[in-house]
Picture 1 (cartoon, rainbow, N blue to C red):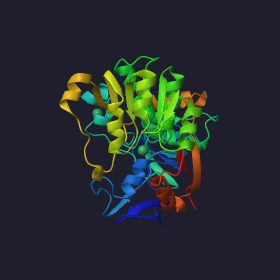
Picture 2: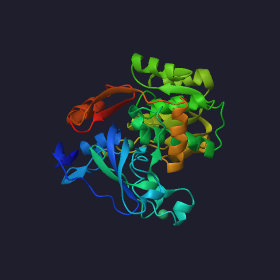
Picture 3: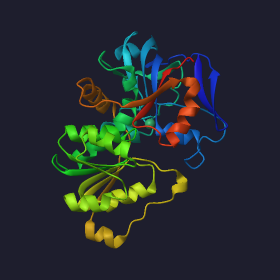
Length: 344
Ligand SMILES: [Zn+2]
Ligand SMILES: [Zn+2]
């Protein structure tokens, strides 16, 4: 089978042997795989040099068809099932189900948790309990729901957990991007008032179309938000820039909730917190990473009902992956790119 690997820092398509499903695993024939910013960061060695040496698989959000079952997997899926897989890469490969964190609904923190990486391939072996069967009305181009969509949904759910009620004002920093565009749709559907922040007229128009009440550039955001709302109740920061983190914090009203999602390159340095500003505004600061298989089921249901959909600006074969990474690095897309032919 064809598979994309990062070999000594170079994205390379190789011929690899078909993997064998083990206990509770299945072999999935991948029909579409989304290109996530995390893949780009790994491929370019942005995160403290991770991925610079040796060989590693790439890709962690996909839709495919179950081809073969390992022992025990029959309890979860059947051959021929069309499934979405990924759970944001940092979950979904395995979780024990029995530890303190698993039982508290935080399998990402499970000490036995295994991520998913390697769906830029014709076939992939995956832990069957992490799969969600997708209905026919969901197209293959919805593959980015598996990480981008789930991560955005998980961030929106943090608002529920921290008491930010529908009707409140929420800033989405990086609103036209691969994650932000889901968050704008979900927040609008759940009754929040959305301030979408991004760069460029076409991106701001896109954000308005998705349901944002106000769409502004980062430069204009502080004055526009102050005038329209006097500050936001929450900021969801999908931007992978420290400047986006600072802006999200700056826009909060007193007692606001700051939800960090984007992971800037290590070279971007650190977010600055001024203790007097903390005293005066008393924000709640949390990080939100991906979601659970239950949240994936809910999101698939929301997508099947048309509440949220993936905006795909670019499709291509696996051989164009490196080119797509360059385009993604240059922020040349609204929404997402999807590899639709894993064999060419
Ligand atoms: Zn991802
Ligand atoms: Zn566990």
